[in-house]
Length: 70
Image (cartoon, rainbow, N blue to C red; front, side, top):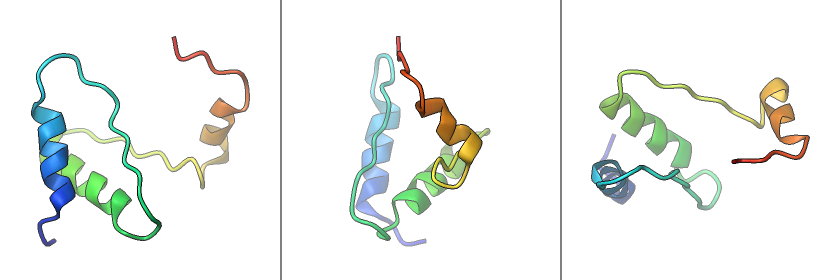
């Protein structure tokens, strides 16, 4: 894997002090967002959970109802 600029952003997020906020990764299709996130997670965390809401109908149903994030 060649070093991507996004990895530096992930490192900054990971090393930020205080309570962690969600990390949102947005961009054009097919540019390596999922790949980058998964590679970063493998390199930095012991346990990883990957859920693809597009392919997993059961997981997608979580968002069918009114979801209160609080």
